[in-house]
Length: 301
Image (cartoon, rainbow, N blue to C red):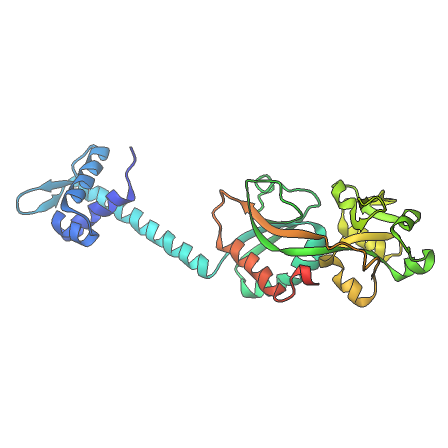
């Protein structure tokens, strides 16, 4: 049976006040409760710490030796608590972040400088992964996941949602023409994902009434690779707003089938394990993303 901090606190308070009754008053406990705690401590240590007389309490030689250890332990715990409180006010340490390459490049990277200015004591490790990352295996503190979450062991904090659109560059359309209807897409070079296959379902209805499931001409596991291919006039693509907003604003990519496109959105969540204590580093990072996005969440761009 191990010694508890409560028993150490009782012991040192009894010594400081030289009275079980006074110690009970200071600790806001009953006299019998303090006496039992002191007795448990001596029983665990299998030694007498205090000699009790009708007039006073005196430390035994063993009690005198143990008192130093007890005080050191309580001081260390107090200092640790103070440090943890300080870290909440001034988060510090290493924060490992994982996100798909497009989100890392287009959302997180532009925010790093302002985040570091606000939290200079936090060190960042930024990892890009196109698949689903095992947070424990990769020692990841927080991951940004796009789309439906599968892992029930994860706690998710919503970041927003981002609409997907069908896009092509002006150069591609000039060379190959603009498709007038969904059926004409089969005559064009279509850029799609290697996996998951669900990303190759585009927000358009076929004549059958089913959602369009394309057969890509060129595939990649990376949305950023598909974006670069579209920008280089390689084909037509379906990508999320968070990575193509600036391209559309600058005219580098043009939306196709604007009126026919379904309002399909991808959910975006910051996730971490439920059994992980939520550190101030994680909360400061997530809050910073939300603050930076401000009044322009993904589903409005």
